[in-house]
Image 1 (cartoon, one colour):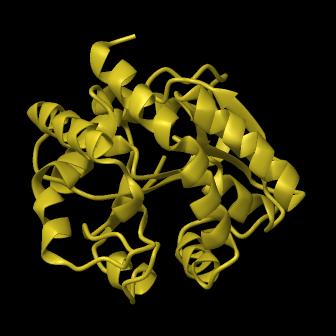
Image 2 (tube, rainbow, N blue to C red):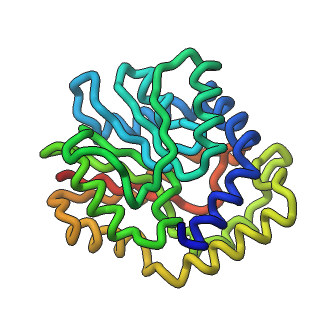
Image 3 (cartoon, rainbow, N blue to C red):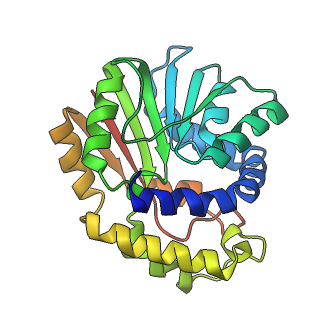
Length: 241
């Protein structure tokens, strides 16, 4: 495994338990319906869909979509995240499969999924072009990739301009982890170009034919500053095979 990936998994191993607790609260909050509305913009109407949740973390998207009747599989490089996802599945009484796996090297047969979803992952991938090619391979014809992410490497300073509530996850992270996150972000910035423009280019090169970018999702999901608030504006990229 590359050094940067080892650093990222080590960082998230330290945050997995607290992250899982917050995602359960998010699942039980009004954010759940907001996220589902965004998914309904792009997902085919048939059920059940076979959905791959890439970089699942502790399983938030997998649980949202499993509760809607879909067959969900979540993968993540961090073993502690997968462990927490499995615990949360039992807590919520939801059926979802979780596997420790590298997002850039997914070990599934071609055309295994109707949809691929991901949240705040692609900015951490040192070989994002390879990941997009692999995800294109995994989708059935007319399948869709729904990617929620942000240009974190160039917008990290936004967090410093907003007063976050005391129960916000970023306020609860120890200083040494803040420093490590900053160092990881700085290293990742060397791999990247402005987003989401760069993503669109890479997705076209990967074979996706219909691509839509939505910069307004940020205001719909994060309408108020609460414990779930993301201080960096996210975008949606929906790409169809």
